[in-house]
Amino acid sequence: MTAYQHTNSKGVTYYLHGQQIELGSSGQKHLYYFSSKELLPEAVPVIPLGCTIMENLEDGLLTLVRYNEPLSWEYSLNDLMLPQTLLEIESFSPSVVILGKILKDNSSLERLHWREFEEIVADLLIKDGYTVTLGPGTKDEGIDIIAKKELEEIGWFMSVWQAKKLKLDNKVELATIRELADTRLQHKASKGMIVTNSYLTRGALERIRQDKYTLGKVDRDDLIHWILRVTGR
Image (cartoon, rainbow, N blue to C red; front, side, top):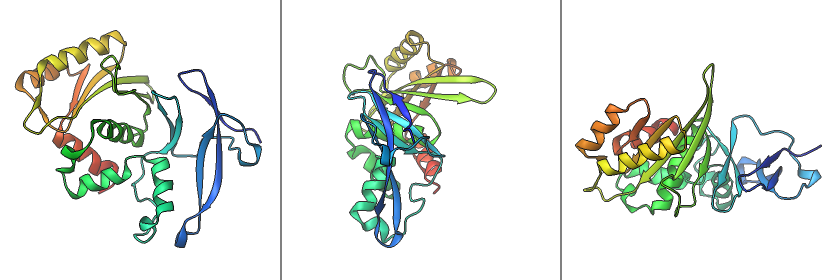
């Protein structure tokens, strides 16, 4: 059996593998991983149903992640206390623990590191069925995330995302939206999206409304609603 192959943006080919692991009272679970070498006993020929591939643009490493499923999709409360359970969940959904904290206390958004904030947005996009490339975090030309999705009867849609992790009393300025518009045009993306844990100024909102077919926003309220929807709360 030949393993499924995926070549990343750096030209390196990785092979999909899987193995059974023990998870306490839940019995065995299947853990998937990518390797630069094909190991035939653990080779997986196709991507499992309901999964997609996420690439870390900084190092090119690949992760298989699930989408369109609640974060606690098959675990009891006791199982979620086990370290090996969290390891498996995090292999599919790196920000699952952080998302849980945000749902309990919205102020957790302010305590996030900016990189954690970007990872949460990437994870939410993946769960909505997008193929996601997460930028390196620095020297990213104004793009934190690239999200692609093939829309039925329409074709491929690509959006570029800029994540702004701010203090709550700070707002996204019009200048940031102008930069986003230029970035979208430069990369020939279908839409440019700003996502923030805060809100937008009046001028920034007006620019978004003016160019609603090419620009969009996810502010604090939108983000909490998105998390609730994706996690099935």
